[in-house]
Length: 388
Ligand code: FES
Ligand SMILES: [Fe+2]
Image 1 (tube, rainbow, N blue to C red):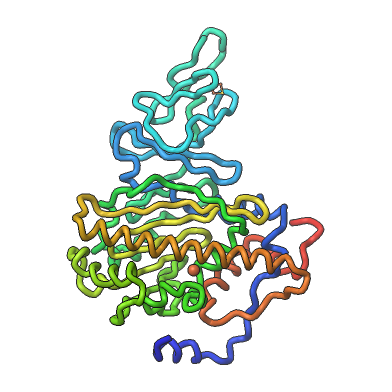
Image 2 (image 1 turned 180 degrees about the horizontal axis):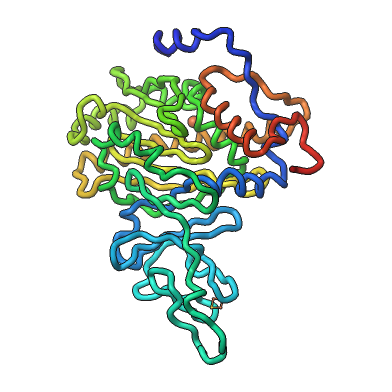
């Protein structure tokens, strides 16, 4: 820790000691539904990048609990979002990602919809004497973009995404996120941990020196996981002068400056971690960016969804830097997965009582406050008989 951070952390000794959430909230079978309804669905969720769906008819789906939505590029170039639910008898229409060249056709009885969602084709139309086609278009979903990412919101009325991420547009402008292209398909990994354990882990850098030795060998964590703008915190790590003892880390340190000559010099050795409540992380490395989204998957399970994006036409050095950065981050990811699974197991023990939180875990505490606000039972030491 550098002395500036140390001074800041010690500057408010009178703050009452904060504690972690009670263990029961990390494994209660009724909570998944409530968390999806009250926390996840009323917030903006990333579906993909604008360049994940560049051509008319390109689509990408997102599953959140019982909900399924897709975003699709219309022939006029606009991006639309719809519930992925047929208006006939409710069949799921699209899977994963792909292209619907002309119409979006349900695989069950073949109802088909235009790219603007209007119902166009109904096989055996005469067998529906009173059907009003205009009343049976796909149900639209609110959609918005920021930093090149396509977001949807399934309920509630949060302010436009630009209100949050737009405030970071200036500091992120040199990276040209909007011009980036996907470097691989979006993947969904299942972790055997509650989504909140994974999010807690992402929201604090207190664990970095011990939990991520590679990251710590290469970078100085700033321990400032505080809100950069309302709803989004930023952590910064600066590359150390000292070469790492590991070849892949050392090689990355030595080539990155040349590989990303498009960036201002001071950003070439900086790794930036943005975390947005309630469940999103965007990592901005000099060579590429990634997002990951934590989705509740039932008690003790979550889905970690995401992929990486980078500027097109990368030269040899940039490709090498990305290879190394993926290698380093795969290790970090495995470490996080391993640590989170250990927390999940520990919380199941009757001996555990919520432990004290460091000031460095303040952003995580803000996350817990959001959860307490949305689901007041989170304040209870024991699980309630039923939820309000
Ligand atoms: S459920 Fe889609 S056409 Fe019947
Ligand atoms: Fe971590």
